[in-house]
Structure formats: structure tokens, C-alpha cells
Amino acid sequence: MNPNSRTITLALWAICFGVACGRLYDARTAFDEPDRPDGNSGHTSIDFGGQWMMGRQVVLGHERELYHRDRHWQLAWATYPREDEPPDRRKNAFPKHLRDADRGPKEIRHDAEQMMYWFMGDDSPRWKDAAVAVGVQFLQDAFVPNPFSRAIFEDLAKKRLTPEAIVELERPAIGGPLYPPIHGFLYAPLALDPEPRSAYRTFQILSILLTFVAGGGLSAITRGRIAWPLATLAVMLFPGYQAGLQLGQNHVLTLAILAWGWAFAVRSRDSLGGAIWGVLAFKPVWGAAFFLLPLLQRRWRFCGAMVLVGGGMCVATLPVVGIETWFEWLAVGKEASATYEVNENWIHLSRDLGGIPRRAMVDFRLPEPDRTNPRASQIGWAFWLVVFTLTVGTCHLRGDRRFRTGLGAGFLSLGAYLTCYRFIFYDAVLALVPLAILFADPRIVLRRGIAWPAVRFPLFVVGLLFAIENWLKNYAGASSLNTPWDTVLLLSLWAWCGWRLVRYGDRGELPAA
Image (cartoon, rainbow, N blue to C red; front, side, top):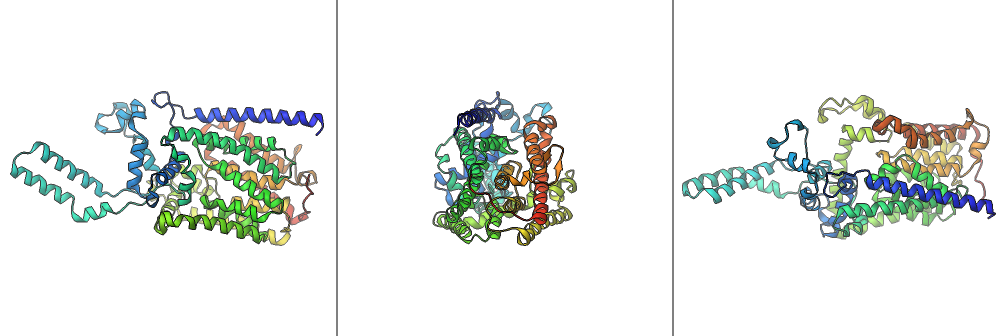
């Protein structure tokens, strides 16, 4: 390495570490609330809290109750005490008739109640009868010495808490986070810390470290043509990264798995790469989406290792959680899929193809149960089918399945990303893997093609992605999260790659740098 290259590399690392410190500081202060005794509410969000609670259930030995709402309630109240909440919330959450006059009818919940509100599932309405029965029993024991009056109260309690009601209350209400049982074991080491507040801080630091790991994997995909510090900077500046870091999401872990799995494939170590991708069993929608890449390239060792590791992780949980827990997870997923089609927050924050028509076609003025729009779902699935069909068809028509990087592999991996069934805005950072695969071959932007003013189209798209995340969204405000510009831009890049592939074909991979 000549002195100039060494100086540039050191300068890039200095910038990289500086940006990382800034990102970490911003993430640790994003949810600061001076009125809270604990000072910050980031650990109470469903994004981190839901995952931590699954891990905590494993630590406490409740593996077979990962999707039982009664167990969730116990853990939520123990984990998020009211003493940590702002005085204003404690005063106005309950009872409602003692609220301040200016609070209005808006629902105000304690931290534990808010966590349970975001979990899937519903509690039995019989709990109201049970509460009345317990209250009546308390009254008769404390204030009613007269035997005749006591008999009346006992009869009233029995009418409320019938044997049928007791049977229903003893049957667990199924619900909870959307993650499979494997996720609880993955988060168990973090959940050894009984305080979600400190575990949240720890996870943010781990995410920063994993950012460098992911950057190394992206650089390895390009065979070093994109330097490690530059790839790491790209991760920290890409859409979705900072929001996920603030929320304590696992998007950087997923990115590191995807990046290093394909980095080993680039080095003809398909079995090891597939084994790494098999860990995506904890994020099955992404595992299923990216499985399309090695499958269409007929990398059978990669596919086999991925299936064996992922399936082995699932089977390994069975002696601990039982088969019933997996069926309960499927029930939770089915409910979540239905909710995803009508919930305003999820629709606006989604980045999958199906969410695009729902933004315009679902009437959010209606009550949520009445918002179902079959036409919006049909159009969304039509979008998905077009991208999937053209990806598969073009790959068979002009893509050379031997090439792990370059135009054909980039097109195929972009198609795999876009056909993910459901995903939210912070997972947009995973698109860096297809971009690294595409830009591993610099000839895609050096040869003649569709030219925009002073810049080639792929560079224009990527530059605009960075600009939207780090500059333009500051002018659009919070509403920028509701517009899937990243999906639209990546869809246009996928189309450009497909057009180039059909017109010119795939010219092969460059040798290692």
C-alpha cells in the first residue's frame, strides 16, 4: 500500500468512527423524556421490548408460553413498573374520571399496557366478569358481616364467575410478538439482564459493532473494490439504519448474516455461506425471500446447507418449546397478516410491494375492522407476481447462473429483496446486499447506458437513496417515513438491471482485485 492509499484509508476510518459515535449518541438520546424517572423510553417500544420479552421468557423457563398473553401480562407489569413512567401518565392513565380536563378521550396507557396493546391477540372478555366477582368477594369479606347479605353477594359472584367462565379463563389467550420461537433463544443472552433499560443500551452498542461486521461482509462481496470503512459508512448512512438503531431493532444483525453468507459464496464456499444464511430462520420472511438467489442460480450446496441449518435450529427448539408453540406462532402470524392489511401505522411504515396500493386504497377514516379492501390486496399481489415472474423469467432468459456478482446476480438479488412478503422501513438497509453484489462489477456504470445529467442511472438511484435519508427527509419531516421512496427507487434500479440484462446479457465477473 502506497503512502497516499494509507492516508486515504486512515482518513476513511476516522470518518467512519466519527459517524458511528454520532449515530450511537443520537440513538441513545432519541427517546429521552426528562419527565420520566428513568430518563428514556426507548426500551418500552414494541420493537425492542417485544424481542427482549421473548428472550426473558426463555431465561425464566416459560418457553412453552412464548405466545400466552396471560404470561405476557405478568412479565410486562413486572418489567415496566409504573414508578418509571412520567407523572402525567401515571395520573391520567387510570381511572379515567380523574383525568385532567384537557386530556380528552384519547387512550392513555401505562408502559405495560402499551406493550400488550401492540402484541397480537386479545384477552378474554370474561376477565371483566372475573374482576367483578373478585370485587364482590372482597366486599363481602371486608364489609358485610350479615350472613343473609353475605349469601346474596356469594350468589352474585357465582353468577359472574360460572364454571364455563372459569374454563375459558384457564385457556391461554394466544398472542404476542411476530417472531418465531427461535427468536427467544437468540435474545436469551441479552435477556439475562433483568432490566430492559440497560439491555436496550447494550443492544445498541452491539448493533454498532455489528455495523462494522456487516460493512466488512459487504466489502468482501465486492472483493475489496469497495473498502471496508467505505462500506461501513454506507451502512450507517443508508435508509432505515438510524431508525432501526434508535428502536433497538435487529436489522443490522440480519444485514451482517446476509452479507457474510454471500461473501463466502463469492469465494466459492457455498456450504459455509448457506450455513450462515440458515440462521435467518429467526427472520423467516427474509430467509424465504433471499433463498430465491441461490435457488435460481442452482447452488444446491448453498441451498442444502441453508435448509439444514435453518431446519436444524427449528428442530432443536422442539424438546424445549414443544410443537404446540410453533402452531401458536403460526396463529399469531395469521392474525398479524390480517392486521397488516388494515392497520394505518403498519401500512404507512411498510416497504413491501403490497403496501404501495394500500396507502391509496384503504380508507383510514373507517373503523379498523371495516377497512378490508380486497382490490388493494389483489393489486398488491399483482405487483409482487410481476416482479417475481420477471425476475425468474429474465434470469432464465439471459442471466448466467455461474456469476455471483455483477449485473445478473444484482438483478436477481434485487428481485429477491423486493419480493419479501412483509417488511417495515428499517429493513430497507438490507438492500445494501443486492447493491454490493451489483456494484462489485464497476463495468455496469462505466459502459454506455441510460445517462442522466452527469451521472449514470445506478449511481443516481443510490445517490438519491442516501440524499433522502440524510438530507431531503429533514425537509419533509416525519411524513417522509410514510412514503416508500426507497422501494420505488430500488424497483426502478431492478427494472434498469433487467433491461440491461436482456439487451446486453451478463458479461461475467471481474477477477479478484
